[in-house]
Image 1 (spheres, rainbow, N blue to C red):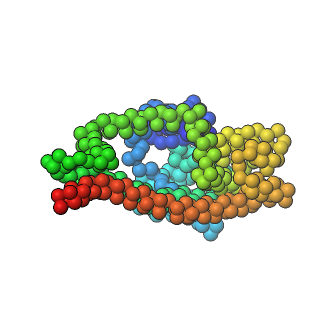
Image 2: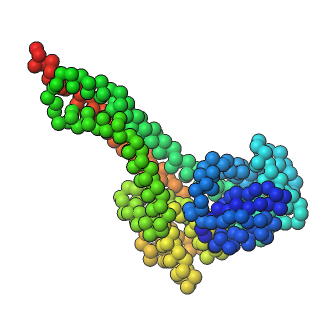
Length: 405
């Protein structure tokens, strides 16, 4: 299901601003009203107004991913130790360091003491907890194993967070190196090259074409920086609008999947996330079709998401999951075969978790290889660009010195 952003007023008069997964904006409004809130504004997360989208960049969430993982793990531990749910929540109420997180736990505890189930209390937190999280808790409550369901949920959150952190950490060094290249180029073009330009003009030197080009680019950067800035802003606006176009996003995802290294990485990352989500849901007793609908929201590539929708339709018609995934011809072959083996052995949930572990390992190896290639490539590019700029202004001086000698 898509995500919606909303603004509302709670029953106590507190302004609310958050996200919620729902089938439509009307469902968001209905759920907010059921929780005693007054909806003010709702809309798709990628289509709502600029002010709300920009404000969300600076607004700290009530629960970070690390706090959500900690809350889930600690609650599972307390329940497994035999603590009643309201007592466990009362203990957890004293643990958060910040007031906003403490208020979230307090609201959950008060709802549970008022007679609500934990899943209902989580659902009342104005979209703070994902639908996947709430459904896993609800399944654990229905099966009588809430502590085990929370423990599996904590494992799922931890592994998902590890994979996301690995992707981010792998890109930090290349990003910093790229910024260093860009900063060095700007410094040379704005500070160093203009000094040589004045020297060449005073000597009325006959310059080579590459020196003339570097001098022209330096002058363009100094005098036309505002035009370049406007071009960057216009490009960003165009890209944002295109990003909201489903057809454009679909074409982009198709191209990404078609690229050899990047496509394999995207497919493995999404397959690992899909398998871990499905495996965790099935292990907690969530029906397969419901699990497929929930897991679809975690797929970043729209080609894979559409393929999963088609596979879910075939499963609904009676086909096996492995067969349905294989017919889409976009999911990795090994993953499809392992799913088929899991279905045949009656251990689909555990086999899906093994698929996730397998592709987590492959993603890590792929990232290591790409990083090993990317860093030297950026270093060589930096050396070439900076060396070209320096030589383009130094070589004419050497020529003039030689001619005078």
